Image (cartoon, rainbow, N blue to C red; front, side):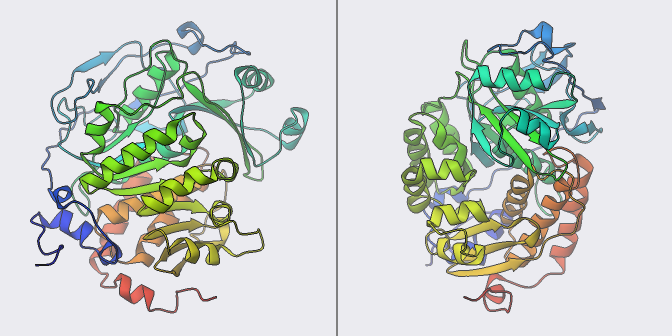
Length: 482
């Protein structure tokens, strides 16, 4: 009896893992394929959140709650330590939520904060391990960057003095605070796409990482809970939550300054191991390689995911990070990754290719080592690589407003397609491109609620009429040639 036919599980999970995309490659533990049943409970309420704080956050390592504006209570569900399948305490958070302008979200009756159930699911559809950072994003001009000596379009790790200097220069400017980080952008978009049972059961999405016990840590956890992404890690006592300042110029280029905080170490323990063992797709954020000794945690988590039969996805995240931690990246990508997300520059960096090499070549090269490779190339489109071939995905038209978060949004589309059992690479990539274009056409990094619902409904409708498969993609004229 073949491995795939020996799996005894409902059709939803079979459609995911019997997909021709992954039947081309090895799988691990059959125990992974048990489908959990879950009940959704829906609440109501309309929440409009705004945050305009940190006016006095000049060079300080901590922010007091008094400087963060008016506190606002809210009801959300919280996991207790080491509870991966049992009950948790639901509490009314009076000190952890603050008003924010997070992507100008307007939450309606059927969205965020609605699934406030007190029992965690038996399994997670997706669990991400990544940096938990609060984003401060604002629009600036080129002169602002020049005045501070910042190179446009780059990402730089800064200390708290440098962060304070930039925030002081931004004093009086309009900017937003959000529960940010590349991985959380993808997870929130995925949770919104899969919030309703459109084309399959509603998705359970979670994140593990490191936040401090400071007000920013509470803000981060509360915002993810509002977005139906359960943040599983407990806050580090007396830790300072990391932040990223995102400066976007009129040409839609963003410059990022990352402050990792004192809570930047992620330890592997029994709690994390238990959660990784109960996930279907485990996503590792490449920015984690910047953190001291985190490679040990990543390896142990990937080994647990492999033993449990989970698919392992890795985000490349940043060129400079790849260059500084090249061997660590390949330790994970070469030995554990089933899915790899990168942009064209990151893909070339992973291949040690020069800038003259095409993203097609990089995609094809990487797909010899990783079963499914996703490479975005900005307004030129994107590629999905399988077994040395690359399917070209045309860009989805949009008027660019802010490119920050485009790659994160694209990754959510690929993950959503896999979880919905899609076997058509072109269709999966087209959905991912549409999601990315939607985010690029707005201010802010998060896919908005109604946009996510519309995209999911459109995708489900198109999926019903699709009969193509990976084999037809691999044999089509969309496969790029040398």
